[in-house]
Amino acid sequence: MRSILLSACVVLSSLVACSEASAPAAATPAAAASCEHGVQPDICARCNPKLEAAFRAQNDWCPEHARPESQCVICNPELAAKGIK
Ligand SMILES: [Zn+2]
Ligand SMILES: [Zn+2]
Image (cartoon, rainbow, N blue to C red; front, top):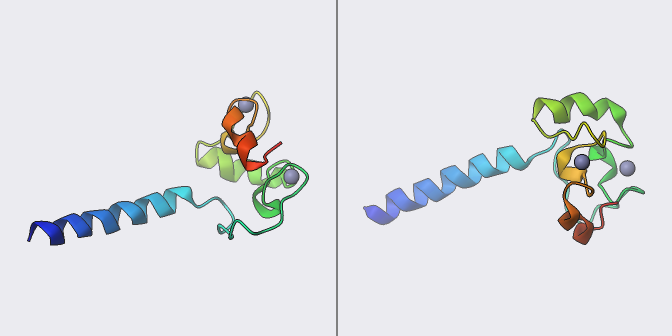
């Protein structure tokens, strides 16, 4: 019984994590080509300024650097490891 509850919990939390992780555009495989900023072109707010509202709505926006916090290598130097510029 315990294990059933536990796995239901895991499924539920992975669903939540999944919906939280999805950016405005559907998440595409990591193999997708990156834009000049090292971000997938369809979710790059610097290539697509109109995405700003969508990122702001998700509370994922760095006003100082005018890009999503999740794409701000200035605030998050660890993003450089993913090739984000
Ligand atoms: Zn870009
Ligand atoms: Zn920033």
